[in-house]
Amino acid sequence: MEVRRRLGRGIIKPVRIALRSAYRSEWDDAMALAWRTFMQFEACDYTPQGIESFQDFITDTVLYRMFVMGVYQLFGAYDNNQMVGMISLRDETHISLLFVDRRYHKMGIGRGLIEYVSRYVLTEEGHNYITVNAAPYATGFYHRMGFVDTNTEQAKDGIRYTPMQRRLIYETVRNC
Image (cartoon, rainbow, N blue to C red):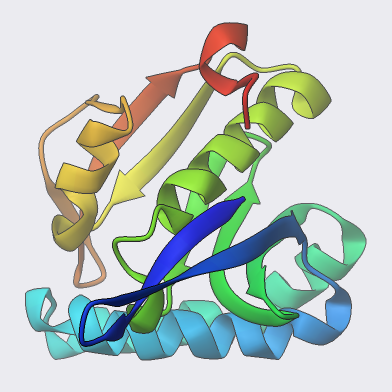
């Protein structure tokens, strides 16, 4: 996908972003990106317990083993082979993590990752929906992406989220 990156002083540079499955060797980079972005944009919405729960989740060795076994999918967005965005999928249809480096916000990378995973879920997993437990910071983004709330905001282990779902039809994901 091609995006435009602002370099300052009105200079805009076209950037080619590659979307693909992440390699095993990129796991640590993906989780570091998730942690860094969480702390920059989302931690303020959580209790200390929630922050600790999130850190425990992304550093869990069981989660990594699930990724290695292919049960937990991880996809990345890359600028010159450097991961600048990531999205993960569990249980074939549930977006578990979605983070984009702050320098790449507002460039369409989050949208591109959602569309990439939507196409994957529809064509590879054979499901016509995806779900997410959206953080307070991200609910507006998910609504713009066509997700609808399936319940009110909830909290578990200090993590606040709104359960959402997006129906997938071939037309919505074919041009990715």
